[in-house]
Length: 89
Image (cartoon, rainbow, N blue to C red; front, side, top):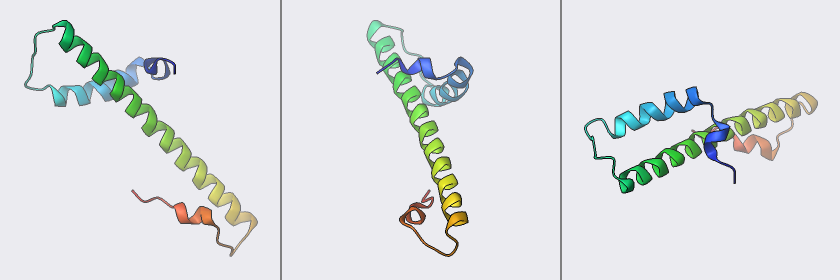
């Protein structure tokens, strides 16, 4: 798997991850030991992956909605299993 940070622009990473990180560490200011830095980098990588997964999910939901509309246009009045997967957020 390629490096997760390669798929996310720096501004997106700074804005989204930085905001979440500041919430997590608002009152903490740990000494930057090697162990702390390693854990911090792992956490940041996990957050980038989460951001990418959220983006991929949104893309898939958009594509599914587009397919739903195409199906409905071609088959008016018919119901398909695609319609069963409507947004459940």
